[in-house]
Length: 445
Image (cartoon, rainbow, N blue to C red; front, side):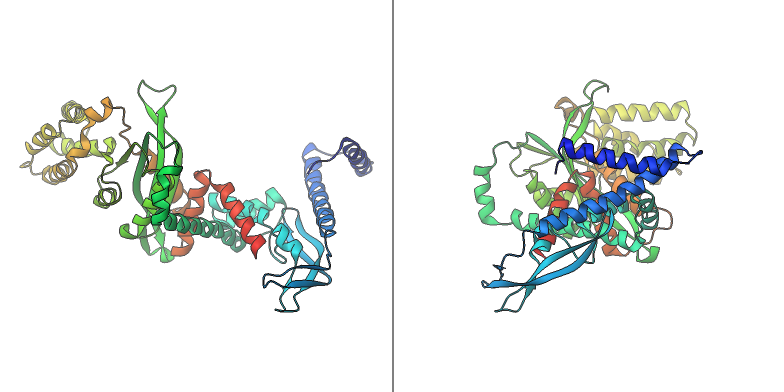
């Protein structure tokens, strides 16, 4: 919606006159006071403009009749008043009301056309509340919104808006699941995919979050799909993730399996020339990869692999970073870097009878034996693979830890999952798609 130059000039003159009158006689005033006053004035002006826009749009009606979902024609009766809470505050408007003589159902075409929800917040305001609720505790968000938007909203309203977007995300994911298991769709898919990724990365991990009043902890399982590119300004050959899509669910590994497949299907993992998974050594991760992507290249995160070495060195050479400990660890890291896992295992076994080193040695040997084929780092580096799982670890931190594990946080399972899903969608750059879905639902209501 644009305004012509003449109207803009008229508005400027009118507003300028109002400002002159408001400042007349004021000998002491600060720039901050002026800005605050203008913010309140602009909010009031926005409310007036929105009410005018709704009035203009309402003039499309009354048509004598409008189609009814039952197939008959609903007849115009009269205009009814309504209000909706917008980013400018409560806005009043009138719209035409129709009743179908066949099914006796009433309808408001303007509400349906614009996605208006009488007595409730607008979809635009709901999105802004949700974005605040993704970033901070709901009480803090309600206070911040009052300062930012000059609108009073309760923490429960922010909670509902935030978790509503999580529900929208979940509904979208259910659609992805149905599509990814539809046999006809899968048969036709190779003919429709024109640009599959050459090398698509996937990664999985989990983060513990408090639920049930904080007395119980559950694992929020997180995943991501991405591609990589050379990182500018870093050492030669350093890679960084791009086009990252995050997803998550507060569930058991087996139940998470369908979402892993559906999100991968959406990213064309089934059509990619090569799929690469990088993750830590958790058995549930690799069972899932074997189940859905048996041909994928499997890489255990380099940093997880090396972190088993220092506990052994400390147990044998002392807790401090002694030269002996450093030399031993660096030599093992060098061997791991070449993919010589058996040499590392033998070096660890040399200390398996050491009274202080038995447990860290046992853990290291078990980890290396279970993941030996996934630790061929020499070949992986040579073939240009990324060998760190920092992308999914970032997902766990940004989705789970930063928002759901704040001091004093207490979550019900459903609320935690909805908030996490909404945050994952935002971090994946999918927010506009959820906003569009919310608009469509409001129009269909």
